[in-house]
Image 1 (spheres, rainbow, N blue to C red):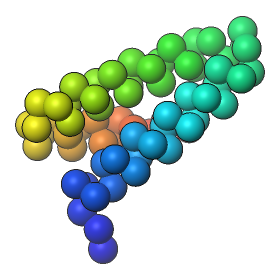
Image 2 (cartoon, rainbow, N blue to C red; image 1 turned 180 degrees about the vertical axis):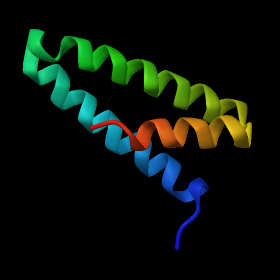
Image 3 (tube, rainbow, N blue to C red; image 1 turned 60 degrees about the horizontal axis):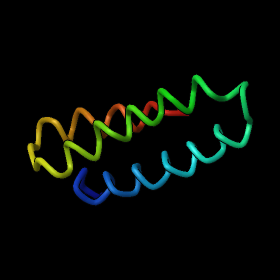
Image 4 (cartoon, rainbow, N blue to C red; image 1 turned 90 degrees about the horizontal axis):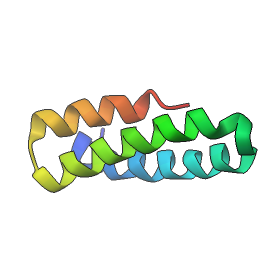
Length: 66
């Protein structure tokens, strides 16, 4: 079983790939892309800040992106 510390960057990568897919949709995916960008920004801030609570919160938010 892996830890959040190991899975967090994997989730960031997955969601970045998802963002690319939303952007490729064009206008129809614009709102979704905007929401995903905001999730990624929060995740990046949490990673840079190193606060475990914020990282866990951001990780859960990343997992919810579809």
